[in-house]
Image (cartoon, rainbow, N blue to C red):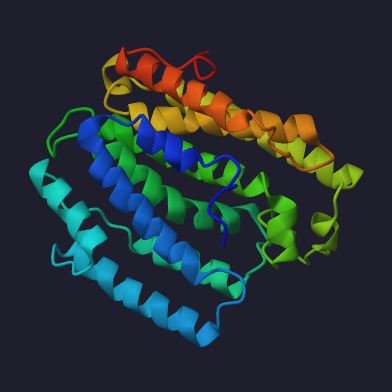
Length: 281
């Protein structure tokens, strides 16, 4: 299972420009995500995949109980304890990975939203809450922001490689009940109906990210600079997808440099209590 395009590694930029105190948490969090993604990669024997999933299911249970064994989960637990928070609950990430391993078709929008919520409620939520102490009054604002922005960020990442995922048997669009054939999503360029559907969804996701960011109080922007930066990078990905339709975006040679600059500007703006350009209304 591909987390994101190797040509434009968003997590690398988020980690690079995260506040120093947050970097060890972000690094450990992304390492756990990568471990789970490797379980769903193409070509891995299903018996091995399910054995790995079962182990991580138990390990994330141990993390939630503050008794982890793996170095990355121990790092997450230690960082949470230092901030006066409970260890992060990443158990939903296992459920999302089980769906990816099974290559389940999403029939209704609610099914896809549940899957995306598993990721958003674990990875994006944890990164949003990590800078806040357990009793921080901004926690409720961070929770609301993560609940809206996390699933949108992940859906944009998946739609940016919709053809590649569809070829592997994973279609991250609702196919309806009874389901329409998924084969049109494996073609490049996409057909007119698929392009229109993708363009409409990308526009809605960008609106969601802007609305969620605008709802944050000024005081929350600095602490949430890492996930605001991630949201800003997701906007760029969505715009690149729209521009490339009916094809799939092919990052230009200088795209990593452009994204590096964009991430830096977004992180600086958030650290100064401003919304990054593009996320502001």
